[in-house]
Image (cartoon, rainbow, N blue to C red; front, side):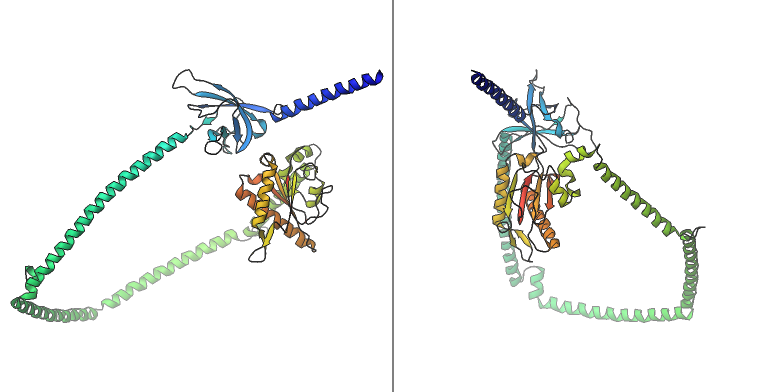
Length: 454
C-alpha cells in the first residue's frame, strides 16, 4: 500500500511539474513574462493589418497588434494599439514612423516601427507615433498602366513628328537639285557669275581697286612711324621710367610694413617671462588633455570591474567584445558557454587562395555559411553573432593574424548578404584553441556562435 501511495504521489508531482514547464514555455513563446510597453498609431487604411499582426522594430520581431479601434466617420482614422518589447525602447523615439509592410509581394502584412533619430527623446508608454500611409499593389498597377498609356501616346507623337521631319528633308533635297540645275543653266546671281564673261571683267577691276587701297594703307603706316619717332624725341619713355621708379619705392615701403608685422608675430609667439614659447605652452596643454583622456579611460575600465557595476557590463556581453582578450573570452560565461548554438566550418572547405596569395571565401564556403544561417532560424536575428577565427599556423603571431583575417572575411560576407546591423556582428581571433569544454580541442577554420543569454 505505501508503494502505491508513493507511485501516485510521484505521478501527481510529475504531472504538476510538466504542466508548469508547459505553461512557462507557452508564456515565454508569447512573451508573457517579458516587459512590454503599449504604443499607438493611426491609419486611414490598414491594408490588411489585423489584431495579432506582427510588429517589427528595425527589422526584428518586437511585438504584435493588440487592439484596433474602428473610426466613427469616413474621415476618421483606425487607432492601432501595439505591444512592443521593452528592450527595443531605445530604438523607438518620438520621431519614429510606423509603416505597413508585407512579407514579399503577397505575403502576410505587418507593422514596422522605424528607429528614430538620436536627437529625439525615447517614446514613452501610450505615446502616439507618426504613421505613413501604405501603398497598395493595386495602386502601383494602376500607376504602371497610366505610365504605359502615356508612353504609347508619346511614341505616337514622336512618330508623327518623324514623318513630318522626313517630308521636310525630302523637300530640301528637291530644292537643292533645283538649285544645282539653275546654276548650270546660268540662272540667278551665282549662275550669272559662272556664265557671264562681262561680270568676270568687272570683278577684275574691283581687285585692282583693292590693290590701290592697300598702297594707300602703306603710306598711312609710314606716317604712324614718324609720329612714334616724335614721341621718343619728347622723352616720354623717360617719364614712364620715373613713374615705375616711384612704384618700386612704394613697394619697398610695403615690404618694410610686412617686416614690422613679422616682428610683431615673433614677439607674440616668443618666450614668456618663464622662458617658455607659445608653441611649448600649446604642446603642454595638449599633453594635459591626452593625459586626462587616458585617466578617464582607465577610470571607465576600473568601473567595469567594480563589484557594483560588473553585473551591468556582464549583461552587455557582445557590446564589450572589443575589450576582451582571447583568454578572457574563453573564460566568459556568455561566450564560453557550451549551451550557446555553434557551427564549426573547416578552413579547407571554406577558403581558397586569392590572386595575391591571401585567403578569400570560396563559392563552396559561401554556400556553407548560408546553410549555417538557415539552420539557426530566427535566433540569428534576435541575439548577437560572434565569428570565431581559428588557425593552426605554427608561429603564434601568424596564427592570431590569420585567425583574425578569416573571421573578418566571414563577417564582411554576412553584413553584405544579410540585414544584420554592424553592432550585432563581432569577431574574435582565438588562434587554434577553442574555449574549454567544446566538442573540439583544436580547430582551423571558423566557428559561428549565437550569443544567447541564459
